[in-house]
Length: 426
Image (tube, rainbow, N blue to C red; front, top):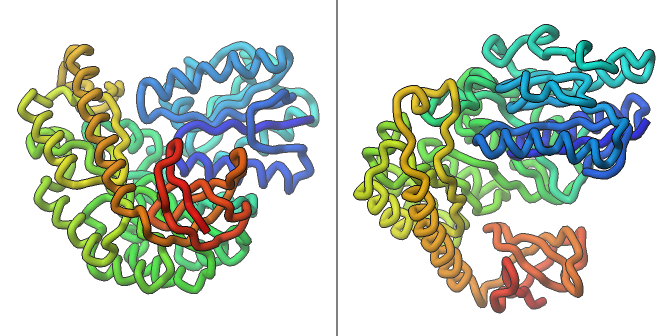
């Protein structure tokens, strides 16, 4: 039995998929990640936007085209959000967001033993077998060794307590739950990859439920020899204690600091707990510690309360922040959220025009950041081959094409733009 795990969405999903594959390998199955012909597919879905839901469902037909007789197991945020929409041909089991590796292992064991799940009438609804996200009250860690990749993802927490008015994820993932520092240290100690990425649904909430701080975790992980990188953060977690821990502990000066809007009026209706002045102060603090830090962000364009004036404020603030990159998203209405209940969506043509303008700011900001770094030398971790080059990233997350052999870290000087990154000369 060949099993392929296909992952959509965030780094948390990637981390959880690695646990699933590791659990299957540990139990003697031929399992790996990727989209190729297989007997069984595990589809790990995303529901952050309506487009993500749609793409998740599209993969069902893609899998059937690769093997008309395949069996498909669906898990993740989208299948928990709209279970019935995944009740399709070849789908034998549907799961949600909790205990993913355990759920997959139990289902595959049943398939292997007696072909139990063969008809749509036999679909397992995840809520009938495990606690739903809403009732999860502690961190459930899938205790399986992860793959040793060039870059390893370590999930430090799950869930979210923020309830931003546009976001469905807290309803699907449940309240914030943190792993203990010892658990995380033990996992990192087993890894052989040269870079570790800490990730979670809301990493900035790490430790609040177990009486420790995020900076405490970073200090403890300073003993790890691997290069360390952080996933997405909220601006309130940025302070001197955290930045000192990063500076002293071998952390990459790369911050994905979620913004969502550069208009204070829109931020209030989004239920974001900061204003632009506070956010900018945090950016300035980062740059005092790390002058060449890569600072990326997310910006939602076309939120229902966003007026023309609000959008211009957001556009101007994005320019002022001088981000190294911006992930621009048109607002997506999510059934079950406060924004979907309370506000009417803007005209599609207005949103499309605003997206176009924000993408222009993204491009100019990115180019300015790269120009600022030309002539500087960085340790580049090369990971994959691309023609005559190997491709990797600087600590501040600039994509570099260079002669540094794959799987190694070496110093290069950033020279000139190339494709979606820069040329690095040894």
